[in-house]
Image (cartoon, rainbow, N blue to C red):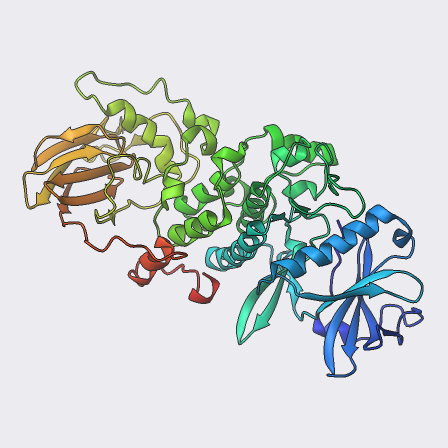
Length: 508
């Protein structure tokens, strides 16, 4: 871990941190003039340099003299340069030269970045708006996707390693830095075939952003980076990381065993939709198999969430993996024998608190061609009491209060009529429309209608008796999906006014 911080442009202009630094004024490799030191970390020092032939500013990262005498550290330092340069992505810092100083210290040369890292931004502003935070994380997803495709796992994603610069007039352009502890699945140390730079049981990284398997010293894969991005997104919205502690092991223990707190409980002022919170919870699942399985899935889920929808991967999230324990223990919810599906709807009460409007959306009965229409009631707080809430009687004035109704009737029609309607879990709601469906107040109701080849879908969370109409359309004949095109991008383009929280197109 290096955690080297670069100075902002204004700080660089002040002058060198150490004007007596012996490296200042020297020329490296006959072409890089070292002008001043602009940052330092645990492993190395960073200097502002100029390529004297083309007058281009560069950053030169130099390994400390004492560490340059340790072969394993030099190997890791070289790996950072090799990792970043091998990926070659616009959101990863470009490293283009490597060498040794006259005193034998290793260095590499990279692009000079003007701006600040996300850690410094959060230190100043504490929290970010959801759209801005998601735009930053989506860019990180794109960069890490490229790294993971090359077999490279960063393993130390944190705000200090997410540098925000400006490019082509765009603010918050992400550059991921510091691949110093990256795990390269197919690169071995020189001179020792079969021996990796990292081994199972070794713990590297920053504790606040470590995945449970990383904290336990287990074998790692790319999903540790997904977990770290979930922590960062939580921090951007809540104002602090989800797990804090006084000791290194205290923090790791929480990652392993503690339940993720609701963002609203950490920061009551946070404006976070239920859909977005569910994305964060899935990214922070303790079991890697319950998280998003790649960063493309996470990026797609964020775009969907800002549009008030759930991506297919989010909708498949198992409740035991993402819901607070208090919302999972629903065995005592009363069930009536006359309604076969009331039990499933009762379970949905907890899911609705987090906006879980699409469970079953990708079940075996879903047809790709069916249209999607989503209706939601006013957002409820993330923390939902499992006991029934009291509501005033409409004709009592200041008199005694009575409990909310045990069920709500939803009158379902379809166009054309006569469709069979099933619930999100695949059970039958009614054999033919028009019909009446019963649900629990506050729960999310997913209805899928089918009439011949025509399909239709609607999701709603009714607070009172409602009428809903499902439009049925035939599936499109064009099924081909261009490689690399995400449904989230097409869906968001067709719903420009669906939400005022959008990931900008350049960040997708």
